[in-house]
Every structure is written in structure tokens, then in C-alpha cells.
Image (tube, rainbow, N blue to C red; front, side):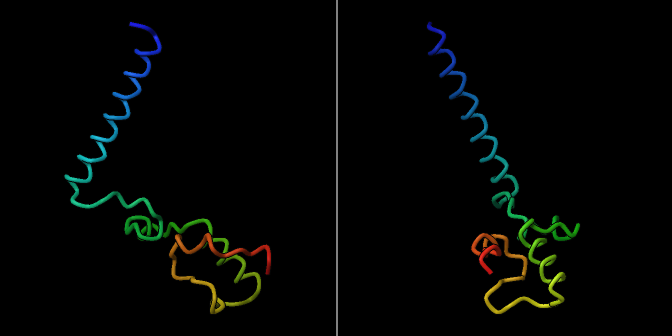
Length: 89
């Protein structure tokens, strides 16, 4: 058996192992892994926020504002953070 074929087979086996492991984790827990910072309850309990939300809060504090402008979503939804571009304001 050639070395290239052996490397490909080992790579496929490793990827397959991780797919099965993630599937088993989801089946045991009963829900997908919550990797989004804004929706993970354990991260919320610890006060962990996404980087964009922290940046947004710091900029508002520097401007002396305690609430967001109407076009900015400040409720901790990190998926919406990427749409905000602070460099063009």
C-alpha cells in the first residue's frame, strides 16, 4: 500500500471519528452545541460577551451615551454584530 493512500485513509478515519463524536454529543444532550456566545446561557451567567458587543458598549460609553442608536442592535445578538461598521460613522 502506498504512503499517499495510507495518509488519505487515516485522514478519512479521523474526520469520520469527529463526525460520529459530534453526532453522539448532540444525541446525548438532545440539542446542538451552543457555540454562539450571545445564546449560550453559561457564558451569559459568567458575563462573557462577544467582542463586537464589548466594543459597541465601550464606544457608547466613550460617547457618553447609555443606549444604542435606533439602527444598532444592542441586545447581545452577536450574529447581528458583523453588520455594524463603526469605521464609516
